[in-house]
Amino acid sequence: METDMEPKQNVTSPRVMRMSDATWKTGLCASSIHDLVSRGLFPRPFQLVPGGRAVGWLEDDIDRWIYSRKAASKQEAV
Image 1: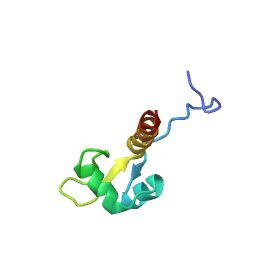
Image 2: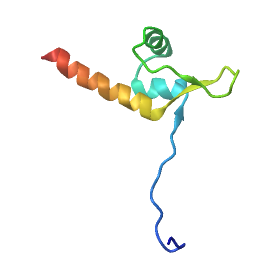
Image 3: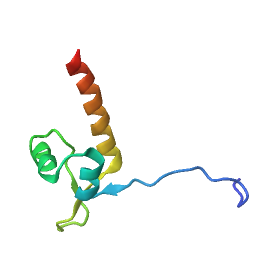
Image 4: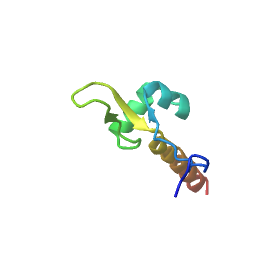
């Protein structure tokens, strides 16, 4: 039984990143991200509001993409 005195588990909420966040995090410009998305080489953003224009990515998806690029670059160097 949990009381107010017991610590709660540290669960973080997923963070939605907009294009400006994605460019900062990856170091890529927006046009490069658009190009990679169109070629299926970068995660596809999702609509934030049904029928709206605003889109974003989950930060975890971008993090996984960054780590996959790091792993791929190590393979390419061999």
